[in-house]
Length: 378
Image (tube, rainbow, N blue to C red; front, side, top):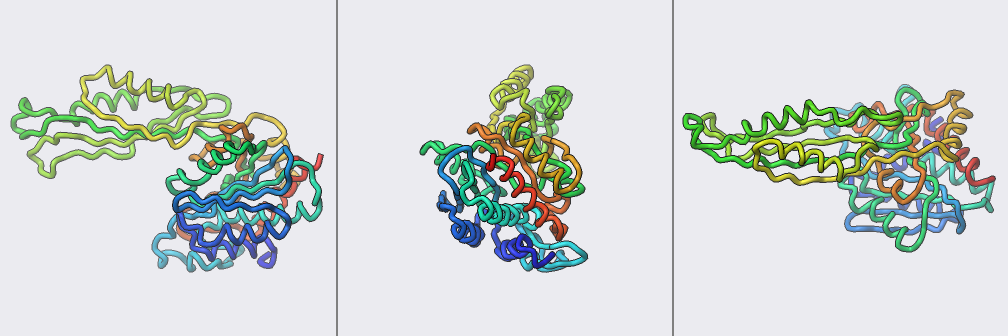
């Protein structure tokens, strides 16, 4: 399978050290392949981030393959079995940083597009690509900016398939049809520094915050719904202290995160937290950061096509899920697009020795090609 065109392209992409936000030439390679089959390719850089919008066709509906060329840092190279940027086949697996997240998806999309256009050169509608080098980083100059630029000039996406590694045990066993929202709170609790022997002359912010934290942890935010698990609250960092055991600190810093369902908006969740805070005698400053609202793709043409493509390729129907973290789907869905995520097995993503089964990228290309056929040839 090493000589399969999907795996060959995947190897070429892995060789490029495209650590966020450096695209390292990945989009140029993809644009060259797409241009050769008639795509109009447009580079859309914002800041240090490289973005690519490519389109084959002038009419709607528009099916968009989307994803990111950037990868997370490889970590210590000597911890890997092989050079993380030198794709290596071992025991039926293809190793390299980004192999699963998400260069296998990108390679499969390109090969699927090449085969689809060769077979249907005058297909109805449009086939498009939206790629960024800013998904693993701040995600502010990537898909978010491209979607705004497309909106400003009247271009829309009807269906979007993200190549994120959605599968869990075997290729295609899970398809993401939505994601939870992610809202982070950066809290500063104000107190008065003083000597621990004279607590009456100080105001300990840790003591002030303790009952607030208990209330936050004891709150049932919701029970979830048919598509989403219950909203979760997690404290990820607490920092206080003045550097000495006999000093009451003057402030406490807390970082917490909500992963929330469609039963909340970020505004309503913020109001609920701030209402809870008002029940306690606490002086604080709270800054919020929204990574993305929750989104959900309802049953329809896209989900039907994806399910059929997976069944035809694997013989098994996929589980439809909204689990996991966030993705750039959070920027595409609000524009009215139906969005799903279908990609490689995610067990090794962001880890040492990231890899994919060498048989999976070619089969993923088959799935993507079939999705295009089901949506754009009727």
